Length: 196
Length: 316
Image (tube, rainbow over all chains, first blue to last red; front, side, top):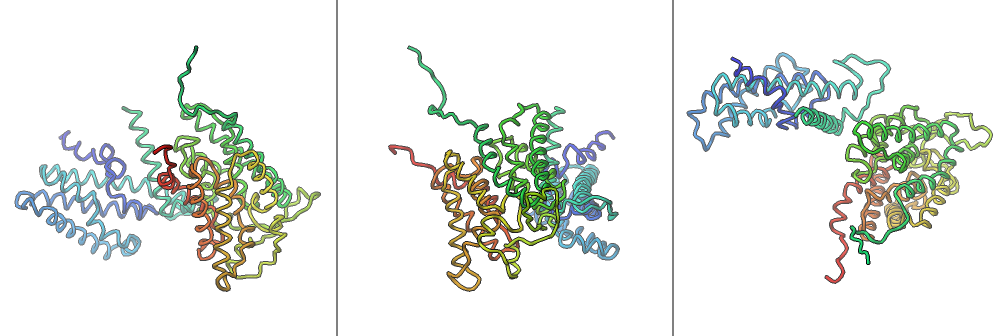
């Protein structure tokens, strides 16, 4: 049981997709302007990750080795379509805010990397746990970045206006995203170095 | 007989970083005095806050990272001073503080301190402020030259000549006004004659050479003359040279040792590149002024210029 828990936990910090594996930085840079967007993107990606990891794990033995990548992409694309349609139906505002980045989860490196590196080799349960852990790690990273960018860059927290604070507009621009991610990466590397 | 084995360079001058940095700061004094005379005590406070925060941030980070404290070499002071000179005189007092902190912390110390920064920290701070609080950074006040009303600060907003040009409005400033500094603008950039005085001091001391400033200003002049608003070869080149932050940028910021090319050939390329980018932004870009962006872009291409303008090894 402890082993299983480890599969889930590693995605959160030790192998965090954004800050350690450096995967999926494109959506991270683009949509982390507000906390809502970050949360929406994180949840959508988590769903796709769990679904695709489970499905790819099931079909791993019948897929010929040479065409495995296209097969993985088809599976991932189906789950992304499910997410996209659900979001369009139930949270149209969020869907409009995230725009093209929801369909682009298909080519998100995290999803394909986990399918290739983990789900096609490990057991079914481990794959699901890995997908869940990676998804949560991605969501946490997005939440961290978007919280900093929204509070400092736009002067709001979950759309509540913070009084008496002049927002640093640069941080809600794309260059601000690069700046924040760079600083956080440096900070985490510093912590890691200090620890061991 | 005693032989001394040591590293190159073997020819040594008496100049030190400390001496050069303080001399550059010294040469900027006339421009600062002119700015204070035009814009009152508010400008003086901005200059003070900018330099103080820069020095304080440098010391703070160096204590935090357990490095040798190098605030005495004047480089942080100079960065803060240049940043303050690049601010409009009407900005709130927290603007120079935040800007100086950003300049030193994220423009210089994060790369490893003096000599390691990839772009001019003062300009980086200015661009950060411009992108973050454009409201404050693009509001200028009318100069009010009065020796006796030092403490009177009346904030009559006045656009800079360049922004008037951009909006195709009558400018109403003579060349003499531009030369003496009687116009809206940043604290240190308005008084051309004071800036030239400082630049002359540096040139005589041989701390800077004319290659970058001359090619920079020359390119802006030629470019704006050729692509005038009313047809080819009809541009108002003198206006473009005298307005904005061109003189301050060309003499004091483009010539920064760390971020400009090493060879003469490279420096000429650097100056021409700065000139073209500045003119393009001024003539067709979205901003009225492009000096800071031009210098930053050329700072970033300095390693590339250096690579292609290596001087030939003698005898090869």
